[in-house]
Length: 409
Ligand code: PMP
Image (cartoon, rainbow, N blue to C red):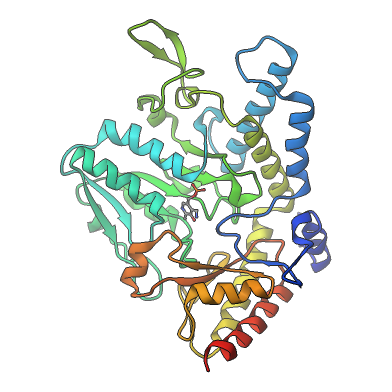
């Protein structure tokens, strides 16, 4: 068994992120906007540079050395992602631009093929717009109906099996980006599976933060973005069960995804290539593979434990500041604390924080319907990753205490 990470180990890990070592507005940068996008370690930046300096070419088609190296690097990254998620086959990983594109892919392929008027798509009241708007578009197109699992006061879901009546697809977020709630994904998938409902899990906030094994989770689709887990922007993936992927029609048409083409029609490759038309983001995939190696080397359980410590400390410190109400569950939560400060608008507060070198995010966090339900104009969110420290959380509390004095006059 690996030994537990010490503070010293975490400081060494932090030193892998050159961007963190800078001053913003004359103060040491505290980067607490990780739920929006994470920073990149040297290993990932070096993998990108190495790819472009040595191996760059288009994949799959060329019979020359660089093309076969680029293909190996790209397909090698697919293997790493498959292993990282516990997929049964490498071919179950479809590279996409990220979570949003992965969900749109399912809506436009599985959804268009399987949904009819009055079928129900079950979502939750805490979904990011990227797990809401694609289903609204699909509902408009097919006549299917949307239904929502309610969110209750402590930021958890009030799920009951009766909500699955008439449902064809249940798509829900694993970890909420605006509440921090960790939904019981395996339990929800089990309930859905028992009634033949297909499940999609939005893993944007979970893929880099805790161990994920799609087979143990029991979902049918899992979508995530690389940029939230140390990889570059513009790359992510959809994992899907092979039986489902095989029956799904393609979405985008073009090069790479065909077997043969006449002027009239085309035949398609097997998954994943059927869903990857055009030149893919090869360097992005290489970077994602390097990020997966990097995270696995630290250990996702270690990362989860460290993130949880930061989140718990933040919730405790924020709770000590008069007029601040932290949203979300009181127990175990994801690596973030979003709060409402009665004495300042989130935009004013994040502007104030920025003047002190502290990167927070204020607004609706792409969950407008949830904000409306909570009757909030938005919230201020501090979101953490393993390279953040308890010292930074203490410094955030100091800045926010000073902000209260500044605004609450
Ligand atoms: N779902 C959740 C829960 C998210 O937090 C995000 C990103 N904020 C997304 C989906 C969309 O991810 P992307 O913009 O990378 O496609």
